Length: 221
Image (cartoon, rainbow, N blue to C red):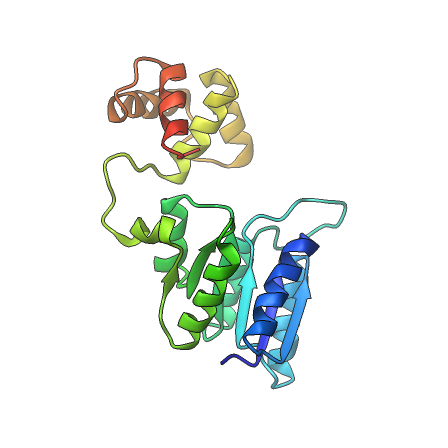
């Protein structure tokens, strides 16, 4: 079983629940942080001192506050750690349950497990830690299908951004400007119109409101 584990979550109550799970598993050295930058520093420092962490458990979403962060999300810190400490095993523990996101983290960033927070989250986390310790991939039951071939109703991150802005009532001209300001590409009005038309066809939607209703019902946004 793992001997040294780092937890990264900005909510103390979540950290406490995870701590309890690790204690029940008999893991002797457990440390916790609430910022991704702190997680990075602790992992690098432990590696430098030749006393590395065996496992890193992190959320994906961290609330922005007064403290400026180099790594503002769990995904950002995972991507960096996989470049610098590829042998570190990582478990994501998050409320995010989009299949596209799970697939990306497993296939591209090679995380060891993805556990969904919820009623059975801590039970599944315990199972995940045991599975990862045995070099097995673990996914919560509700996202197990993430590694199956994509279905026709799945969409990419660009589509999700577009749909979120449409759901907020922004006209396409405003979305185009927002995309340009935030570096989202393509950002031209014609590209956005084409993508929206494609989504209408993909989801058999009659208009923007109908499209938003469908994707919300499917849990895509």
